[in-house]
Length: 142
Image (cartoon, rainbow, N blue to C red; front, side, top):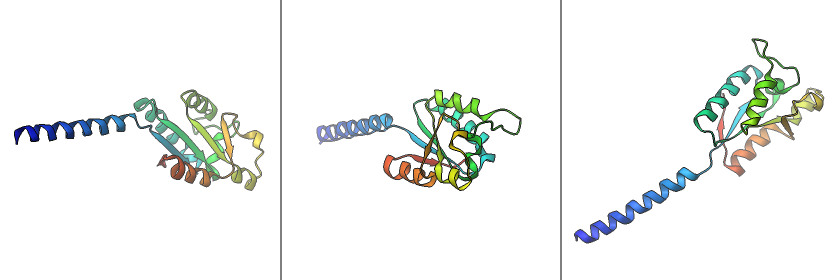
């Protein structure tokens, strides 16, 4: 009976080790949702902190509605610092920024005003849904 218990314990331990190793290798994918530019500074700070703690994370920020304003050329924060500097720094760290085309059209904003680091997607909310449902991204709303 002792041999059988040892054998069972060894198999159980092996299975748990495999599961833990698989979980450790699973890619961390996160989508940050910004629909109000007043949250942009907090979102960018959250993303920096996230990458500091988890450098291999794949992070996408999707902006729509008034949330796109910080991704427009010349946008500055409350202290007068340009957002484009922070956006470029995060792009270098692998972050992807996506801007809603429906918002651009609805607000009559020229596509040329969007920072070149950002990708324009047909719909911000559809992009949020697609990333979560089809690509397994975790949702964060700063």
